[in-house]
Length: 119
Image (cartoon, one colour):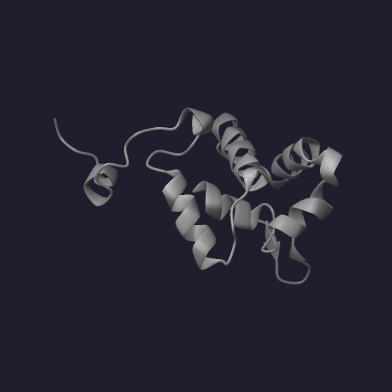
């Protein structure tokens, strides 16, 4: 059986984790851990929760409208302070940094040079 490009580049990482069943093809938790290490983050349960939310929204709507992502994250973390809390655990921006961790491309408009990163 022919191998996919991901299987060639990442042998042994083709197993999927049921906690991340909306992950993009080829993404692994190890990928997120490598990104987190480069960015000086120590991933906790809330980081993984952000990743799951972003991946689930992406699975439903590939265009990932910025407003939809922001509202989804705000709703999931409302009890902890919403976007204010998310900026504490993801100082690079909950959507932009969260998308990097989740193996997703941030939606257009997620960073605005005149304003900064949006939640």
